[in-house]
Length: 454
Ligand code: HEM
Image 1: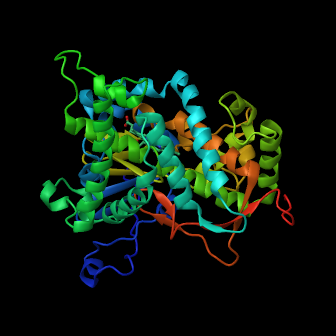
Image 2: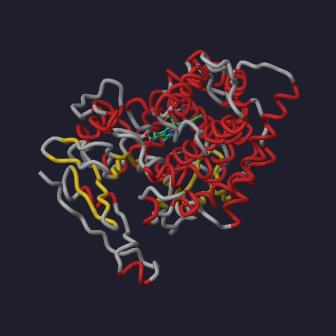
Image 3: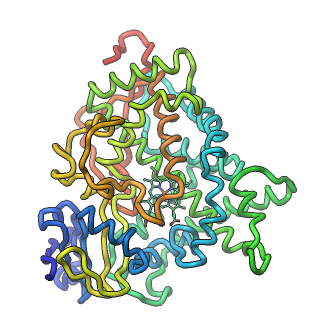
């Protein structure tokens, strides 16, 4: 059976001709939910499917994964700045690169990294001033960038934080907008963004990554970190090490994928906490009890902070930083009763799946107890996908969960972040789901006079 069709309204502000030709649709993943478990739209004759059913998603990401490589939008939108890093590569090459990087994310390594995460969070929280309004998005970006550079590459990027944030904003602007060309196999000279600002953002990232590599090579040191692992990795058959280009692609991918998403998850968490005093009070109580007078948790503290973890999981349910990702159907397939034609473009939206009312009762409520250990659930496994699923699941998921808990606890121990009255907070769906225009909030020291814990 054929899936139902959905037609999106035209994007406001798009050129009139593009609107008239139907080339500027305003995709709305929530509207696709109303069409049932699956629907499709057409763009220049190409079928774009929206799959909002956990069982169908399981077939795509797991059971019949060989039929569903990454979609062409990865190549068109992300490859111009990520190159052939882990997020984009495929087949045996991807498998080998993933095997090389994986040990850096094993539990034994993560244990060691907790201290650096705590250090970075404590430094940030110590620098804050009572009463000041900060942009939470850029503060979280700074701390997660600091963490990823120190923990994975043993590098200090504190002087580059503003530059990288601006570069990421440009890359998001240039490549995160849905253009009709994103869905077609076209030569790279057509799809590649041409603006000077794009080239200069890529050059900024290359400059930082090249400097990190050059410093490590010049030091002659071998450390127990991801950078050394990648620098020393040899191909089993040829005994060749990675080319400088490949090394650059992996490092830029890990650097960007490793900080922007976690920063977004933390940012939305602070927004939700400020809206939900009951949850904020429970979290404060847990953190105060576990930390006592200490400024940040250790690795061993984490298992005594279950509520902090539940808060993170629930915040990423409501605002999954990677709110959509996509695949291509290489051959024809069957998803339940529906036919999936060969060549179709498939959009999987954690955002939509996470708000399906039959999986998540009262889906818009911020309710961390859904994730309580032992909470009874008959929800299918792929109804919750903040880190994707199957073999391409995020390599940094445990790293990110640990980092989220440490930064959150270090902030909550000393600070409350208060919403700015009257300011509406909206999402900005690009490559990731940032809050539109950042997220200004007021810092209140919890031990300052006249600041009452809620
Ligand atoms: C809250 C934080 C994070 C979120 C929400 C997130 C989300 C995701 C998602 C959804 C995917 C799968 C994309 C797909 O299937 O097409 C992915 C892949 C990936 N992520 Fe993350 N991520 C996070 C943190 C991190 C961190 C901390 C790192 C590294 C330090 C990282 C590195 C990667 C890489 C390299 C891939 C590609 C993996 C592969 O295909 O083998 N991510 N991430």
